[in-house]
Length: 274
Ligand code: C2E
Ligand code: CA
Ligand code: CA
Ligand code: CA
Image (cartoon, rainbow, N blue to C red; front, side, top):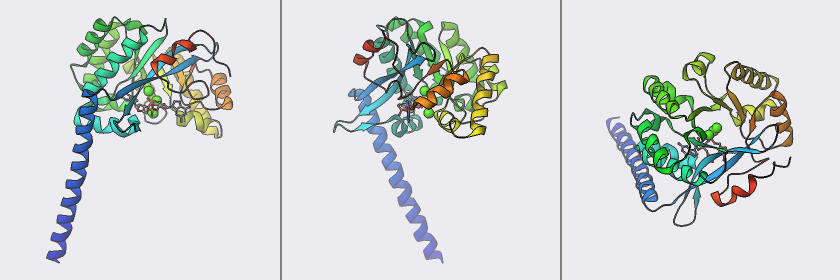
């Protein structure tokens, strides 16, 4: 009936208003989190597959709310992307991470960059400014991007990546094995590194076709002279598997969890144990 329709409509309207309001609240909170310095950057060391020495760290963002609650990036990054706030949060992460990592010898620093950042044509200039201000050697910096960045706006992305590489910064394709990235795609964007997604690593232990996919990804990366990192390695069996498959670096809880900057230095001298 007409009345029923109207009722449903107003119900949707209320639901819509509520969702929008929740989104705005979170957005306001994120904005003040940035102003009030509630974000923290943790660092997870990556080890060389052969020597087990720490060769780089990945910067991973956390939000510590005033009530002490820790919120992971999977929760708030999508909201920051939606509102555009990711641009300022992302620059903040880059500045802090370059400052922290300056003291850590010759290891590399990887920073995650979201699609919305890369689509911003100002991004390369802003990155260049941060490198200049912090004095962080561009050759030690690596940006991790996912293929959504490139599919959404390939023209801007390619232009920006060219400028960024011109600084001496390298670019890694993150979460490989979860999307559709093809060999042509890898060639077009000339990544220096491929990061095999944790799901591929986990599945490879039990499943023949996942293992085949991992092996062919690695040989494809080899052919294109790219380095390969295995992500999310939690067990010795997984480490043995990705090592024998030919991965160059290993990242995962088996070796290191993300940690605050003060704890990094003590891990740089000796090889990791397992
Ligand atoms: P990612 O880039 O794929 O990062 C790897 C994620 O796997 C991290 O989760 C890391 O803590 C987790 N991890 C590492 N080793 C293991 C392991 O052995 N087992 C398991 N189960 N997990 C492991 P985290 O820190 O929660 O970050 C989640 C995602 O949020 C990241 O995925 C990245 O996409 C995004 N992210 C984190 N920091 C930033 C940032 O500063 N900027 C942007 N744009 N995105 C970020
Ligand atoms: Ca990453
Ligand atoms: Ca990843
Ligand atoms: Ca991921």
